[in-house]
Figure 1 (cartoon, helix red, strand yellow):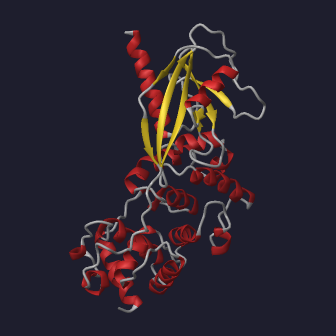
Figure 2: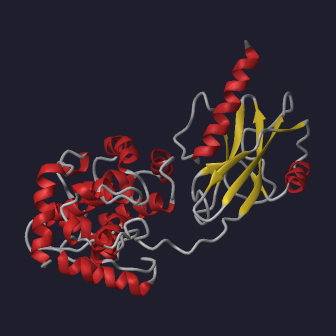
Figure 3: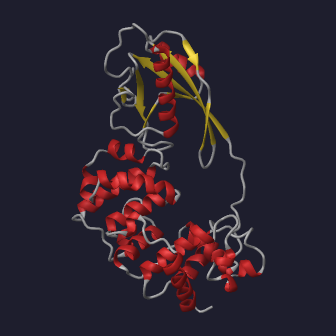
Length: 359
């Protein structure tokens, strides 16, 4: 099929069956499109539909986002995962304000130079907000093109990815680029799905190599499997006057920049930390929690220590100046803090148990 025929068939299908009422499709300014594109990375649309309106209500402009604290941004992001995206979002907003408050949508290279914006994201922002011809290659598009052209090999390989970029560039039309970009995303999200693709409804069924050769179930070629390792960490639920001690996590690593419970590699390390600070009481083991990350499974082992009538200063309980920032957190009057989803659920469960003991 000629590239213009591919685009023509796809656009015809999109006009009748595509998604036309997503929140970020209305008034598609570079800022609004950018927020949606970052949220949609590694996150399903249905979840973003819940987060996007709240985020935009709090940060309606790039200036509002740039002026906010990182804690405010992370609080509204909590639950979307991949928190580096949120920190880069904040950094990018500040970088855009340093450029005068406008995204450099006229230049692909200048867009890619902004924090957290890669090649495909920059192209999507440009295509949706200005209609400029720009080529995207997100996960949905990779799947569509891999099957359409019968390209074997894991798309994460540089040679395969380069082949897909070239095909995407060849097929992107000169006109109706915004509609085409949404159309090929929609095709991958609604018909050419990872499992059980709806081939009979696809506008490219007759030209699809994977369909003709019965390879839709094995294309794209999956990433070579590795056994997902397990990591075990011990978390301290240190309670004082119905408040919990939280520490800010470093920007690098899991849950970067969020507030979490003090964490230890071993229970012995946890007990040594308590002894160093002369914090005594009955340490109670709580039910373990499992949380899946992309590269490993985290086993969370919570331990609870109620300080009771002990006199504790209102400030942090650190013993050295280079220790992480700490606060006392009241779940009944929560501060604007970003909490990892499993830690927030753990605190909520502890709070519910507290209230149950009062009645």
